[in-house]
Image 1: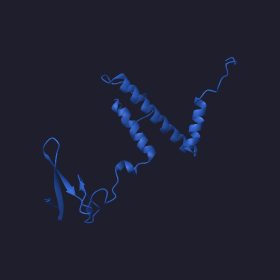
Image 2: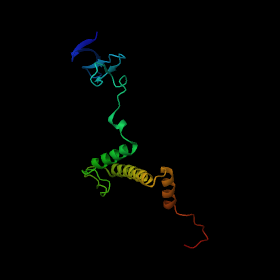
Image 3: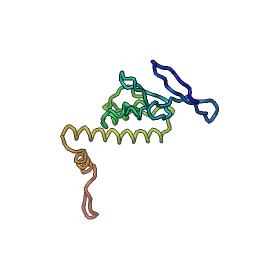
Image 4: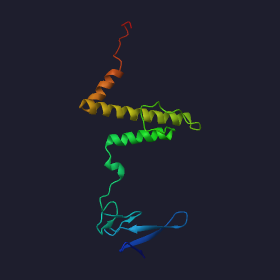
Length: 153
């Protein structure tokens, strides 16, 4: 049987579930859809309460542009390695003392690819052209021309 919580003059129903290793967890029941949810929201100053789905709530990251999300991810990677400034122009941080070399190399490769993507998007924005155009130009510069065996370098 659901419990009732009185909050700001509103009656909100809650329910309980048993946890796997003992104990119990309390959940709110959405007043609109009866979904079990950990958090319920109040929309503005209206008396309407509901879950994130019913009120069409969005996560903070959903309000950011894709480029802003890429930058945030790049900063988080560098922060994990000990860099405190949110600046991609600084040298890449050294391997932390107790981190495995494989882990550091994997993280560094991820960061390098992500920072390369950030750069491509920035150049495309500045030059007012498509990202694919910049990718083709960068790839053309990075790929050496084919050399026949008979040619002398």
